[in-house]
Image (cartoon, rainbow, N blue to C red; front, side, top):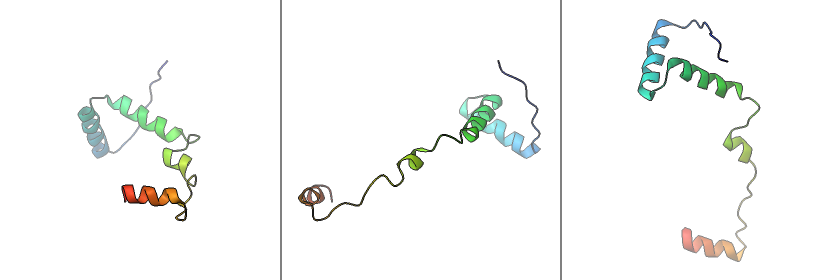
Amino acid sequence: MKQKLTVTVDPEVLVAAKRYARSRGVSLSALIERALREEAAVGEPSFTARWRGRFRAANRDDTRYDALARKYL
C-alpha cells in the first residue's frame, strides 16, 4: 500500500520537476519514487561496476589476435 509523504523543496526545483515529469508522461510522485528507488538500491552494483576488472589485455603474440586485428582494425 502506498503512503503519503510530505517533501519540502525550493519553488524553482518544484517547477522544473513538474515540467520534467510532464515531458516524460509520468506523475511527479512516480518520478520521485523512481529516483528514491535508484538511490536506495545501494546493494546492487551498476553494470560497469559488475564488469570492472574482468577483462585482460589482448595477447598480441596469439595468432588469433593477428587474424582479428586484420579483420576488424
